[in-house]
Structures are given as C-alpha cells and as structure tokens.
Image (tube, rainbow, N blue to C red; front, top):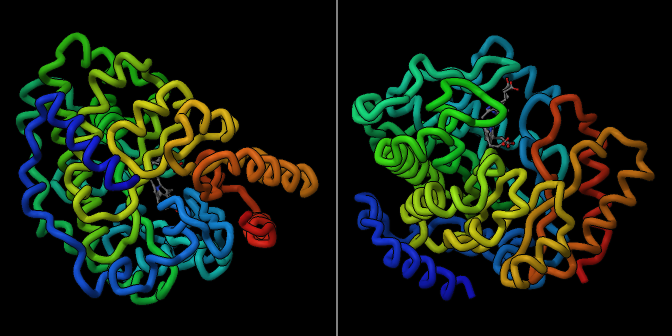
Length: 381
Ligand code: CP3
C-alpha cells in the first residue's frame, strides 16, 4: 500500500506539472547501517503501526514531549537560547532523549524547530520566549523572495551530527524526524511573527500568486532538505507539521499549498521511511493532506478518529488525538478519554497514540508517564 501511495504521489506531481526539486535526484536509499535498514527499528511497534501491521504493544509518543514540561529540560537549557540549543549536537541529542528515558514512549522526536532551516540558510530569525518565531525582516515582495539565501547540505551538519548521537543511544527505539510544511513556515516568514489568522500569506496567495509560489517552493526545498538530513543520518520516520493549515479552506489548500507540501516530501520519498502529515483545525483537509503522498495522517483533537477514518475511506493509519486540555483533568476523566480515543482509533488500519497537539508547558510530567503506562497496558487488538 505504501508503494502504491508512492506511485500515486509521483503521478500527482506529474499531473500538476511540478518540476522535481534539484535535490531529489541526489537522494538515494538509506545506508546499510541505518536503524530502519539494519534491523534496529523496522519491527518496532511504531514503525509496524505506521506500516499498517500488528505492533507488539500500542505505540505512543507526544508532540512536544521534549521541552518545558520537563524539569531536566529547563535545567540543561538554563542560559542557552532556544535556537542555539538546537545547533549544539550534544545538547539537542540529550534533550531529545530526556522524554524517552522518563516516559518509555515508543519514539523520540528530534529536538529542533521548524525555523532551523531558515537560520541555517542565513535568514535572520529568533525564537522569542513566550512568543515564538520572529524574523528580522518579513518576506513580502518578489524581491524579498528572490533575495532569500539557499540552504546548503553542508550547513545541515550540526543536525546530522545530533541525529547520529541520538540514534546511537536510542537503540531499538525509532527517532522521528520532522519539518515544517511550506505553508506554516511561509506564514511566519510573511507575517514576521506568529499570527492568529495568517492574513498576510492568505492575501499573498491571491494577490500575488507568483511571489507566493516562489516563497512556498523556497520553503518546500529548505524543509525538504532539513528532513532529508535527519532521515539520512538515522531517523526512522518523518513528520511534516502544517500546524496552521487549518486557517485555509480546501480550495486554497489544494491550489496554493498541497503542491508545495508534495514538493517538500519529494526530497525524501525514495528513502522509504514512513511519512506522517499533521496539522491543526484540518478536519476538512484530511483527504487533501493524505494526497500529497504520505503513509499516515495525524489528527488533531477536534475530530474523533472513527470519523477521520471514515473521511479517509479507511486508507491510512492514523495518529492522535488525545485532547491536551484533558492532561490537566482528574485522572478518571483523562483515563476514560484515552480509552475512547483507543476505541475510535481501532476503526483505522493502524493507530499510533499521540496528543491532538503539543504537550502544554504546564503539564505534570508524571501524568504523561501514567498515560503511557495505561496505553501500553491495553492489548493492541
Ligand atoms: O518534542 C518536540 O516536539 C520537540 C521538537 C519541536 C519543537 N518545535 C521544539 C520547541 C518541534 C517538532 C517543533 C515544531 C514547531 N515549531 C512547530 C510545529 C508543531 C506545533 O507545535 O504546531 C511550530 C509551529 C513551531 C514554531 C514555534 N517554536 C513555536 C510556536 C514555539 C513556541 C513559542 C513559545 O515560547 O511558546 C516555538 C519554540 C519551541 N520549539 C519550544 C520548543 C521546546 C519552546 C521554547 C523553549 O523551551 O524556550
């Protein structure tokens, strides 16, 4: 089925007349000593479920499992800026491993950020605590886009090094690599900062589609290379985060965004690692998000998984979708909710438990550990 989807995706690209991005031809197969190839992770519960097989236990990981909910994270980050911490390989690796050690989750998610490819390309960007990504200069005109520096493969060496250190420690637990999807990344670039409605990029798509497409393709290639660096260095799966795609209607998504997201994934498809696509507020976009050519669809907390599966025609494994708000509810309420999510997910051809968005920073980490224990205690039938 994965193979079939891959061919479909290639076909989709051809139909839309997209030119393959330059790095595509350069990417080959994963190396013989890659964890997915040498037997370390191919049969893990996570990869088995992503491929639609029967896992030995119910796999679970959490978006933002590394980070401010963990005292050990706050300790190692003391005095170090967020993006600097991502570019110190030992530190990024240590932060990635912290939640795996503590919670016994079924995957590590590489500690980095969707704006790291911008930073490594030489774009002036920072993450302001409590705010999010802020650019020195927003990208709003054709000249702004033309002036963007290209991300090089060499600049990604700190990322590859952090991944190598991490997978050496993880053993049989897979590492998930990730990248921001072109829309979410471009949304920050146009606005220059986080925004609620993403008016800037949504205006640009219609008012100046040529500039929008050039920007979306730039972001696709930067994100695609960033993800490819992680996969080639040892990550066993890759997740494309289109966190803000939910601000788009299906028409705009299909016309102005899906081709660029597909282009980002063109950089990694032939590596054969499972690919997951996640966004929030995307209940109406799930089919279009699958059709950019991915193996797994991540569902946010708004749509029950049985309904998501119905909309997708039972074609792909799902990931999700415990409501992060319930992490702060009394245990009985949270437990009942987790059991409901598992029951709804059983309709799909595979299910990896996760939250419906990231771990809130104020979460009690002991609750996350208990949720993992609960999920692992329920047999994967
Ligand atoms: O466990 C993990 O998921 C770790 C890796 C990770 C981070 N960011 C670390 C991070 C991942 C996968 C991301 C992706 C990311 N970054 C997304 C997509 C996922 C999502 O949450 O929707 C987005 C939209 C961003 C952009 C971004 N970076 C935001 C909105 C913020 C929060 C700003 C704030 O301070 O509230 C960041 C900063 C960030 N990225 C933090 C972490 C752990 C917090 C920074 C800190 O600890 O000081």
